Image (cartoon, rainbow, N blue to C red):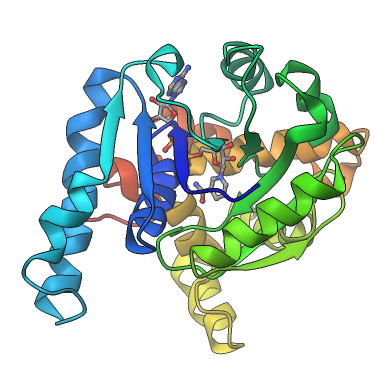
Length: 280
Ligand code: NAI
């Protein structure tokens, strides 16, 4: 199956970025999200294209042509027969389950979940066909990050895997297969880094700035606090909780109270203009 028309459900941090990557590769995308989210997401997409235009990476006529290939839909019922649906809604199994269960049962295309940590096999029971369902874990910002973890669930067919990998390459990214375990590869390996950094700061032993600067000095592009701000502290907390639960509450992976406190204060990172740092 060749994937030409894509629908993305959820136009937040990740869904918006995935839509940009799809548009830049010349394909069409239908975006589904709540009406109140649309304006912000559309503005973010246009801002990104304007940036490319000002750096000479897009021609004058490219922006309208790209935007022509973007269609907003009020719900999955309004989709016009895409070959692939990617869900990028909140990292909550109930929300994801409801979205997947809401897809038409006779949907004949592929369904990918952009979950960061939830079991693809467990989510597959909500999909129209578990054989045509898999994890497609993009990284933030999805419009720029090249890698995608491709995660087969227990029932994902070989045909689905190869079509999905071909789609990932077609949008200029590199698919890497990862096992369907808590946090796959990247979020499993990264979890102790975030948690140790939170513990250090929580114990009063170091500042947020010092941890970030030193970790960045070790050739990490972003320190753990700047990265949590970019990801969204709410999303990072949801992933921490999910990995912790799935690994049977191992104490070393227990989420830190500072994460919960930040979320309760509405300090979600860049998206709320205030997280561990302040953003204009
Ligand atoms: P977000 O909170 O920025 O966006 C989620 C969007 O889903 C919101 O716009 C919300 O309105 C929409 N939504 C919720 N329920 C919906 C429904 N029933 N129908 C349509 N839209 C609905 O979250 P973000 O950060 O984009 O995360 C989305 C997924 O991507 C999560 O599973 C997350 O774990 C994963 N992810 C996040 C990364 C990050 O750095 N933020 C990186 C990689 C994966």
